[in-house]
Image 1 (cartoon, one colour):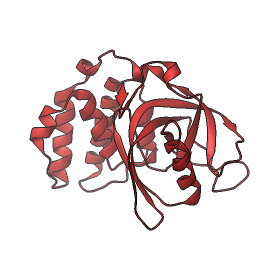
Image 2 (cartoon, helix red, strand yellow):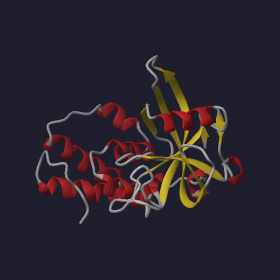
Image 3 (cartoon, one colour):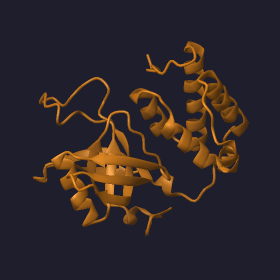
Length: 225
C-alpha cells in the first residue's frame, strides 16, 4: 500500500511501537482520510514527535464501558483494535492548533503499554498485515445491496449524494468511505473497524443501516444492545 510518500508492504515497513491517540466515535480505515483538529498539549507533542519521525499515529477508541483501573479519565482503557494512520496533511493555525489529516495504513492490535515519559501514550502493537496485502477481495462485496440500502438511508433522511462519484468508486473505496462517514455510534464504528475483511465490513454496514432505517427516518442512536 502506498500512503503519501511512503510504501507499506511488509512488517518491516511498520514500527514495533505506536503513538496512540484515543478518540471516541472516530473511525479510520486503511486507505481512508481522517481530518483532525489538534489542540491539547499532549497531542501537539505527539504530532511533533511523529512529524520528526515516521509520521505514524495510531487512532483507537476508548472502551465503551470502563476507564483504566487508576480511575484517571485522561488514561482510559482502550479497545483492542485501532488503525495506524500516516500524517499526509499538516498546517499550523497561528493560535496553537494543528489542522492535520491522517491517511489510513493498516489496522493494529494493541499489546503492552510502554512507559516512555512522554505526555502521550505509546504501545507495542501488532499490525494486521492482511490490510497490506495486494489480494483483491472487492468482487465479494454485494455492491447492489449496499447501494440499495445507502439510497434508502438518503431518501429517509432527505439527503443527496454525488451519484456520479459513487458509481465511479471501487468497492473498497465505497465500503470504507461509507463506513467512515456513517453517523453511527462508537460500538458500530468499532464493529466496522474489526470486520475481518471487506465483504464482512460491507455486510455489517448494511445490517446496521437497516436497523437504523427500521427505527425510523432521522434517528441516529444506533447503539448495539
